[in-house]
Structures are given as C-alpha cells and as structure tokens.
Length: 145
Image 1 (tube, helix red, strand yellow):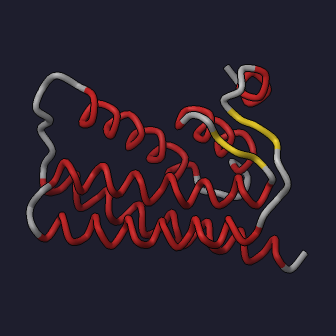
Image 2 (cartoon, rainbow, N blue to C red):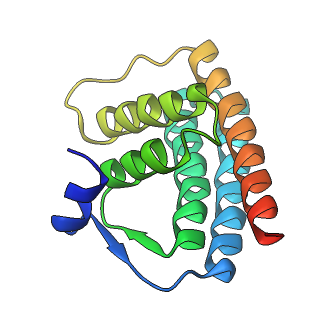
C-alpha cells in the first residue's frame, strides 16, 4: 500500500491546509511528551511508550495539517510521512515512528502483558523530543517560503 492507495481507501483525505491546526497539533505533541516524561519518572514504562508515540503522532499530524491532509488511520499517517518527508526527516525518525506505532498497538490491544524496559522507555522519550524538534524546523522553514 502507498499514499495513493490510502487516499483511495479513505485512510487519508484532502482538506484545506491549516497552519493553525498544525501549530495546535505541535502543542498537543508537547503535552503528550511531557506526560510521557512524567510517566517515565513514575516508572510506568509501557505508558511512557504509548505517550511518546502519541507525541510523535501529533507532531506528524502537524505536517499533514500543513499540507492539507487529514489522517483516518495511524498507518496512513506513517505512510504519508514516509513518502512525503523522507527527504526532510532523518530515516531514524520515520523508522521509530513506525516502531512505536506498532509497540503502542501491541500495548493497547495485545493480549499479553508488555515487557517494556527502562531503556526502551527512555529511548522513546528521547526520539520523541528529537522528532518534534525536527518537525518544528520543517514547519518553520515552510512558513517562510
């Protein structure tokens, strides 16, 4: 499946670009990141992962809002970022967005208790911090063009 398929299947939809929504999405990303940090400090590592992913998800949504795209699936959002921003975002960010997407899904919907280490949780927070910064740079750069 690619981005074209996602639009055809309704997983992504076109709308008017909206920098206001984009900036609000960054604000939510930062809120989720702060929540992830607090959960990490409480040693609630599986929820640290889910909130780190949420932070990255909302940052990625900021890119979509800027481009006039609405996601109707987490996978569609990932594919869009992968196809449209692979030249602007480091590969590690795109890879981690997908890894955390899958981990969050397993934590939230799986039937087994997740085994999340402190190191994994800490890494998820670190990558979310860097991802949000990278997205903010893209949005700021594109605002000036």
